[in-house]
Amino acid sequence: MTFPRGALGAASILALAAASPQEGPAVKHRFACADYSAGKVLIVSAEGRVEWEHPAPNCNDLWVLPNGNILFTTGKGVLELTPAKKKVFEYRSSSEIYACQRLPDGNTFVGECGTGRLLELDPSANVAREVKLLSDGKGGHGYMRNARRLPNGNYLVAHYGPGCVREYDPQGKVVLEIPAPGGPHSVARLPDGNTLVATGDHKGPKECKVFEADPAGRTVWEITNADLPEGISFKFMTGFHRLPNGNTVMSNWVGHGQFGKAPHLIEVTRQKKVVWTFADHQAMKTVSTVQVLDRPADALKGEVLH
Figure 1 (tube, rainbow, N blue to C red):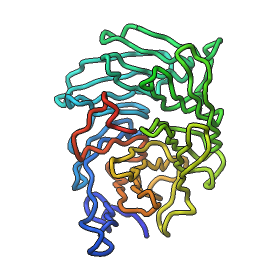
Figure 2 (cartoon, rainbow, N blue to C red):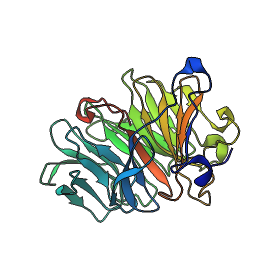
Figure 3 (cartoon, helix red, strand yellow):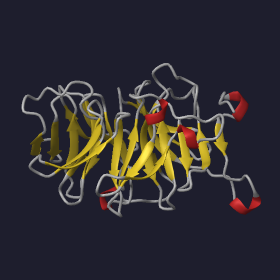
């Protein structure tokens, strides 16, 4: 199975859910995503057409907020735009930034990779809270990728270069560490207390996967290249969105010499069956994060697990 644009229609969408009449209609998703290599964020219709886009250099994280605004990272900053592209929030830094999140109190969480700082910014982009994970502030390019502020006030951080996920308390003390030798890129805490992690290609195809760890850090579910059907492969797993039905939509970053060689997005069931993929290698190059927009979901109430 290959993924040329023309062979699979205008958007190169593979809807695999309709393999038999009992499985229902073909899967379609409207979604927002970031294209790291092309430097933009996009909203894509269920038919695969780009509805909205805006420049966003090296973007690795984005959210469509309950009011319809789009919050996303911009290489060394964070920007919030209305659907009409009016700027309503902006933070700029000298550090690379791969993580952002709007908090229930209206503040914005930001993870600064280079400095190793976790920040909570007020609506005027002033620092309301700062947690320093590094005494020297010299994390470098690979120190962290996505991170999340948890409802209990702790922080979940994907330490890409060190190859682990750590949970920190509000004082910056490590309270949980989960090995992720492939290089963790995205993390999310699930309602049952488990942690969902997407990892890259540090250790080759075997460690490129998405997995779920229990509160003790033990892997209780994972999907790897060994679980995929012929013609679909993981290259570098970056983002995901765990859906209400238990399926996981995952972003497959096809950089590092893999341009055009695999789908941008892959959806699997809990039983590891692929039910949907998306690829449009002309409209986008490398998808680093995804949020599915099929139904209303309030990110400020924890209804968006990505």
